[in-house]
Length: 120
Image (cartoon, rainbow, N blue to C red):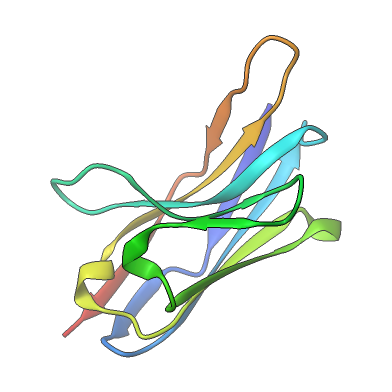
């Protein structure tokens, strides 16, 4: 089992910044990827940004390119999402995820979510 604890959400004005954190614990020795998705009301959950453990490369959604940056502290099993130039359309619940490689499957674990609200 893997536990993910998120923090850092809140209310910010458009153009402002926030930093999200996600700390992982449990059976994470075979971590494949770890990062962030988001879900706005009435919309599907979408990729924000995630880090591939094998080579440290990042995958990101087009809507956050150039504004959001993901980083990780491997010693702390923590990933961070620095969000700059926030827009009202960034308002959503942000979910941390961790993908683990097991012998027979690759489960994805989710955090509880943290609300980010951007006012215009």
